[in-house]
Length: 401
Image (tube, rainbow, N blue to C red):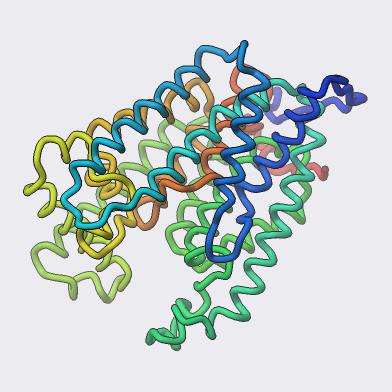
């Protein structure tokens, strides 16, 4: 039986001589790299630079933007309007405008990357992606090593009573904490699965070691689910519903215990779950008091902190309170436009992020949106399907790049 693995034929690379082609290639590489690597420590201003790159890249294609990309850009415009209305109707004393701006910048990365990646042949992508993956892994290794060394001495850890737990090693120099590094690694793994035939064993081993070294239980669980879906690719639809149904049942059971018996009912299972269920409980209280405009348009991403003194932190509170019904539907449509007819995007990127999202999600994740756009560009090609194996022998073989 034939394998569904990715097969690339190495061919001489031919670059167009025009300035526009050179600019697009530079933008393609830079957007991928800086979506995964923050420019500054603590203050991630990568998205300001990414916004400029996206604008330059889109200008190169201004007269021939395809229908699905135009739809995605139009949805970004509608989301920006929805966010503006939501912020205007937010009851918070102070308004956060920076996070919504970074959210819209992140959204712009998706269609831009899709547009750029579609212009390159498989042979070129096969040559480019392993190099980019290599340097992202180098950055993530630096992040991991510096976190394990310096985390115990950072204020977020030294001022808290976490000396006897793995939380001692979660404060990062490059992220708010290692949970964000975990989400980034999930996105990187989705790309690695897609270009599987060009990735060597050592890089796979390093990626999973880095994932476990984040000590993010949600990201580790999502990474395991991602691998299970890949290995059971033939039954991916059933695996998808099985994983989501199991997660839903567990969450409902734990939240019921929290609501009826208090936080002590789940504290012994996982102390951090208490904060997640507290946010959900707070969400229901705020939603009951919200007016129609707040329920439809939300209060603006990142604005729950100004209203309740705590970040939304999980995907449910983000969608219900910060995006609202209208904003959530627009965002879901945006993701659907970029991931439709692309199994790799749905099963290996969106699913793991959703699973991770109950513990942590952020609307300013350029690494998620750049991966979404890259995988969307592969649909309808031989690479669409993530190189998922259809026979047992293909599932065991990983060729070195």
